[in-house]
Amino acid sequence: MKVRIWGARGSVPAPGPEMNRYGGNTSCVEVTLAGGERLILDAGTGIRTLGFSLPPDMPRINILLTHLHLDHIQGLMFFPPCFRAESDIRIFGPSSPEASLESRIARYISAPLSPVEVRELPCDVSFLDAPASEWQIGGATIRAEAVTHRGPTLGYRITDGDTTLCYIPDHEPGLGADLAALSEEWISGYNLARDADLLIHDCQYTDEEYPGHEGWGHSPITEAITFARRVGARRTLLFHHDPLHTDGFLDDLHRTARRAWQGLGGDPEQIGIAAERAELTVGATAAETPARPRIAV
Amino acid sequence: MSGPQKPLELILARNLLTSVTTPAFLVAKDGTLLFYNEGAGALIGRPFEDTGQLDLQEWTRRFGPFDENEEPLSFDELPLTKALREGRPAHDEFSVRSADGEMHRIAASAMPIVGAATGASGVMVIFWPVDEQVAREVTTGRHEVTR
Image 1 (tube, rainbow over the protein chains, first blue to last red):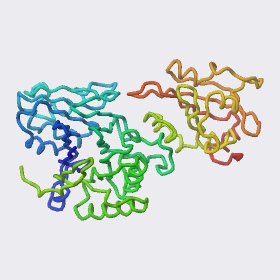
Image 2 (tube, each protein chain N blue to C red):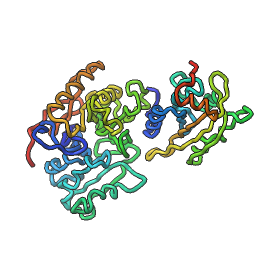
Image 3 (tube, chains in turn brown, blue):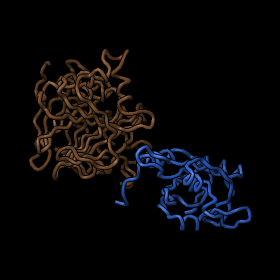
């Protein structure tokens, strides 16, 4: 399984020279399965650049949305395959008793916020509630479950052969709970992340920043690391960087997280931090390719 | 691991109950007492950490409920049962017995917890001692818990 980060920022795009190494685009991760099929996790602004890299004859594009906050769907309207008649796009997301996934997303892709309407997109696009039970995409088994965030939000567990990726970009499992002391059955996201080969997880705040943001739906370093430890993740990639966090700040945050992980008895090499354009191989031959220099597109 | 992960709505309900002093139980749809908070522990005389989860027979044997004559009430008559079966809030007054054998008259409101993905998963029962003095002690943490 290969994983490529196209956007690791949370909340709002954060472009600028001081953000170059980690990138300013919001959440978007490309997953290439062993059989060659690709999945796209979230449609933040990173999906725009991803769209340019996809082959025009790609048979079907599967996008798994964790939730509908703008930083996770903003790129949809600028995703090049949406404007190709031959594209077949399936978008999965959280269900709601209030309205269909399509009509909720159409609140953004509609006037006056957008120059186009969903019905005007030339591609063949379908909107599907993420099934409550496991389902298959290509060779992968997908499981979606609700996790602690603000509003209906899913995390995903993707298993391809004997390799498992867990993606929970927006998550505050320690809200109102002592994460270190809780039994596993009471930990939000535990089922999804248990024994994952790679856990991509929210780490928006430092511990010092967190008290001013408690209940906003995101994790500080200690909670992210404790969650990773409790679920037995083999490798963790810290994700959903705060838009105020510059490259230098994120370097420090990464060092702090590695020390915290080491303090829990782990190997600090198991704690990474997501950088735009970084590529990772997950599974038996796990390796990470450093982020490439950013390319203007 | 002590069991499969609970549905998110139960996890959030427990987190909420942990954060408030109002006595409350969290009950699964099969009647298992999943959790009670410190306020409830103060009233019934045992902190949750000492009892852990209790099945329906065990917690009703320990705590009740009882009617005005201290006779056991049927599970069918409890607000939580109505909330579970009918999917609506329910309210009533009855008595519970604390660990030291003392009876407490309480008013209880039960609210069904229905998850978006999982459907009915349990009930949150919030209760108040009818005796105002005891109510004040419980919600301010001054009511003594027997360990």
